[in-house]
Image 1 (cartoon, rainbow, N blue to C red):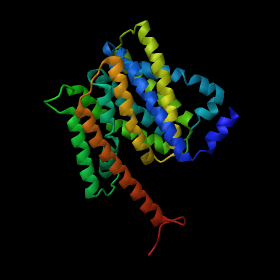
Image 2: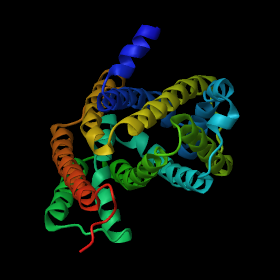
Image 3: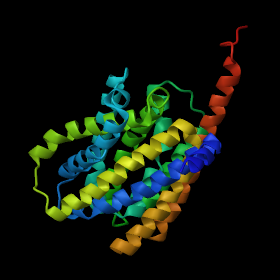
Length: 309
């Protein structure tokens, strides 16, 4: 085992980050499967609470092993709480849309994340977004419309709700990337689970439906995959640049399409993959332009600070 650890540590950080991200995609695809089954009859708010409640339980051994002082101690608690709150809102919407569309469509619409990040950076951060990036945003939205096909396809409300949840998750992921600079992966995931469980509890109580025993088993599996998936994702964020990890997310479409087809007989039409390809191309271009922009900023600032005339 120690030899494997040494060989793993010898790999380049970017490669390790990519592998962590790829494993996270598989775990999140399994999470989708395990939650889709009870989603057919359970209230989405109850589901969101149970998913993170069981996810929190799987964190207990990690906290006990590493110690509460290492996993829960933080100087950035307000940011953890803020991130957990907005992630809970995205999770509520996601569980509403889950039983109303296919797993492949859910994944494909999730690729619009970088598009919403660009819009947010322009509107709220005052970032100078040039014409080419706005064109890429428009192309990405066109890809989303290809999937939704309002008034034509039968995805309707489910796809629209998932699309609304995407910018919320994107904001949460950006915050977690920022937290990863100073916080460990266990700390970020522990506070995420605690915050979302507490935020979802009163809403779930209001809409409470008592789950069946079989439902609880599915949530145990979902909690395990979700917790491990977020741990892998955070490890990837700490090792590699988030723009480098964008292409790995496209594999999630394959996993979700295959699982949806073989387990639930979901048959996403060709337009889902056409739209996904358009969105992905747009997201990749936006990620590329963001990497170029950061490189220019770093070269301008230099190791000694901002250049002066």
